[in-house]
Length: 67
Figure 1 (cartoon, helix red, strand yellow):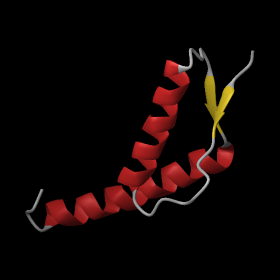
Figure 2 (tube, one colour):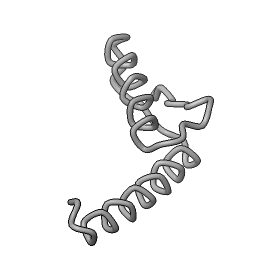
Figure 3 (cartoon, helix red, strand yellow):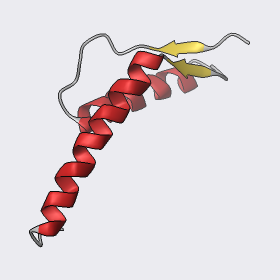
Figure 4 (cartoon, helix red, strand yellow):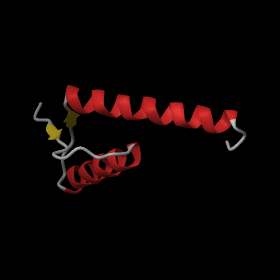
C-alpha cells in the first residue's frame, strides 16, 4: 500500500489550527486522487495533547457556567 504521509512542518498553536492544517492536507490528498493517507506518531501525539488541553479548557468553561 502506498500511503500519502500527512506532515505538519510548523507547530500550530491551537487545536483549531492543527485541525485546519490536517483538513487542508487531507483535502489535497483527496483532490490528488490518493486512496490512503497516514499520519506520523509524532503528529498523532501532538493532536492528542492539543485535544486534551482543549478538553480541559471546555471543562473549566462549563464549570463556570459558560458552556
